Image 1 (cartoon, rainbow, N blue to C red):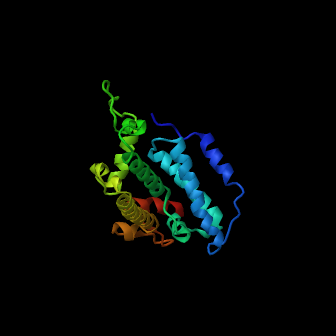
Image 2 (cartoon, rainbow, N blue to C red):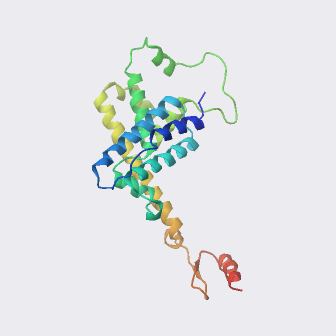
Image 3 (cartoon, helix red, strand yellow):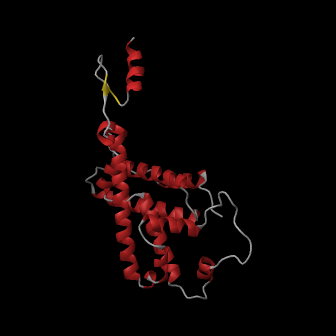
Length: 228
């Protein structure tokens, strides 16, 4: 059963980075950025077995807060999260979690068959069934979701992790491709939010009083009421 991300878990992580001193983006102190993210990932892997989307969003928010504090980026600078990751030269928290999970699963697959951890990972219940409608996500379910997100078939776990170098290279390429697609999706979403006409290819309705563009005729009708 997955353990929830409690408030105490996040408070312990936040206390660890309370006294971080902001640094310039070009400062050598930015090498500590990777240490921060690795510590966060280790805490997550230890405290939580299965992550839901809401947990990843909370970790992403804390991740970006730490990066902005270390790099000395303020809210007034209006720097997007993708730009912050590019300036710090680091992956997003979701890619870090996938990398840690894939490496850990590869370590389990290489274990001898008599190890209890491997037997538990590949074992199944002899009797009983899961709840219908919306069963609680298991660790294997989370692993399959992450594998498919990185364009890796679950069957690759049978042979690929046996060779450590090949498995590490495979994980690195898959996670890099996932991060590129994720970043491109965020940029597209940001463009649609900032410039709806260019992103959606729809015509615009311009107000004849203040020249404000509206994405629909009903929006223009509602906007004109503000000038009455």
